[in-house]
Amino acid sequence: MADFILSNFITILTIINVPLAIVVMFMERRNVGVTWAWLMVLLFLPAVGFVVYLIFGQNLSKKKLYKLNKRTKETLAAMVEQQRREFHDHRIVFNDDAAEQHADLICMNLTSGFALYTQNNHVDIYTNGPDKFEALFADIERATHHIHLMYYIVHNDGLGNRLVDALTAKAKQGVKVRFLVDDIGSSMLKREFFHRLVAAGGEVAYFFPSKIPYLNIRVNYRNHRKLVIIDGQIGYIGGFNVGDEYMGLNKRFGFWRDTHLRITGYAVLQMQAHYMFDWNLASHTSFSREVLGLFPPAASTGTTGIQIVSSGPDQTLEQIKNAYIKMIHSAKKSIYMQTPYFIPDESLLNALKMAVLSGIDVRIMLPSKPDHKMVYWATFSYLGELLEEGMKCYLYEKGFLHAKALVVDGSIATVGTANVDIRSFKLNFEVNAILYDTGTAMRLKQIFEEDMLDCTELTYEQYKRRSKLERFRESCVRLLSPIL
Image (cartoon, rainbow, N blue to C red):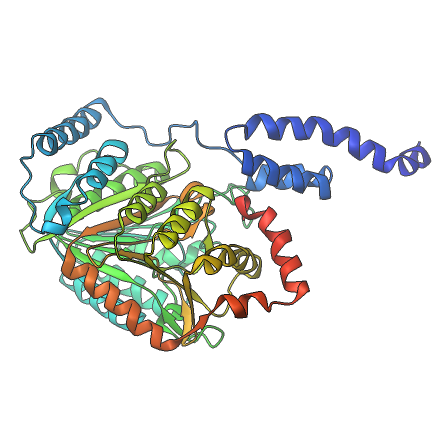
């Protein structure tokens, strides 16, 4: 029997692979690109590929993860409908004339993502770890009611311990502290790390945790959001996680260039709502008895218009990607994009191509050094199509570029947690702030131009000089880009 199996091993694997391929085709039938990518995995890794699929390819799109009670649903629906009527009847008085030109984008986000539009906000921009975390620690020190934190990666190092110590001190003072971390992003973090915070009265929850230590089969569908809400008055959103590397202390990466926002105003209440939904999904405790204290009247601190837009694999529409495409199509002069990874789907790639061909100044900034080689190779496979048409590409040399920002015409911008790749747009839980304010957008455009001084431009002529090995490697990895 053993001799028969060995002599017919390939035939047996092929027979096993056929029903497995049918299962993949059935489960991924709504996305042709993803289906073909998984079939490639099955072809080159017979049988084993299906195990990989079970780990990386679970489909959550049909599952209603966020179960809202009737009262919450009715309240949200009423708020959205009221604002939709105000837009329809032209009763919105815009603080910035440029924002009015993007009323269609605001309505799209409002209708498809329940992203209410507020314009009494103030925004501070941080581009390095020391400045961002010093501001955060100062706000934590002044907290009086609650501190809510959500990070994808938390490290047990100098910064991580300093943060937990500060939170523990506030918990001892009676401030309600909740900390939500992703179980995969922070997979190396032992539960004991938070013991002192929990002992002081704080709460900690893990997003999609595994019941088996150090083995989580939900590698996809991670909570990649980074949010901090303090007293319902101050909100932080952007790309920084928690660890010494984000302070520029990691020799491999050196200076860590990221973009993070500190927001005050009514937009913070939207951030609070997103936090509550994620916490209720991950934790055994809920906010049901504390709602009033979590949504205090927000002071009118500024004039910046903001929408907080979220997306995730539980949604049928890719809200953040759609917002990117809508912003790109609205461009008249310039599109400045910063992202550590660039793996666009066909719709986003075509939007950028159309912009370049229309004579718009399209610039993309990427890190010059990779942190994930396969993703970096896939990124370069897409650049050629845009460089050939006239797009400008800049490779950041000063350190590692992790910023996730898009600025259009210096009048509208978005900053958040989503990378420009299929994983962020479709597979992960993400959140972005869309900023309808010329002053803020111009500041982000200026930051991009300042970063260009630390970049090397990648021209199409240089791109064409890549070796045959590099081209072959990029072509192979591109086939798997829908699932990277």
